[in-house]
Length: 130
Image (cartoon, rainbow, N blue to C red; front, side, top):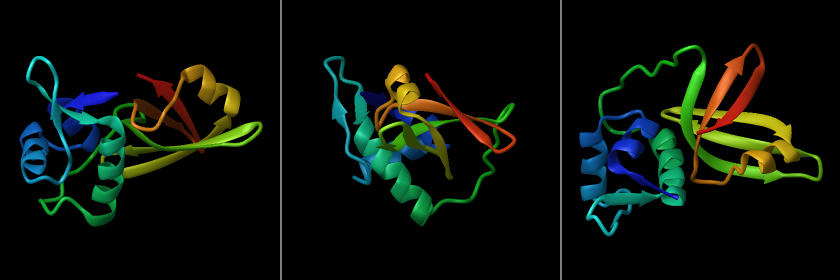
């Protein structure tokens, strides 16, 4: 799975111009599709989002809010057990972790690098595939 600069910017919680500058500076690898659009591989974007959250963007802090407790982001890690699973999502500067069944992960087809939304209610985090 690959993302356009605009999609990557939305997942990282920054403007498309910022994401483009990061790509131009070589902070995240891009390639071009047959139409000439710049794309970022999902696994590269997942790794970059984790790195970015740890070190900060180097730009002015902006507030990141969710509407109705939904955190769109990118899957950065999946740990599968025999019955249970752990899914991590990086939503801008926020890292969310959900414990769910292995069956749910498989039914959703979740993979590292894909877009997903973490929905939070009380102490539970639910994952929706986008």
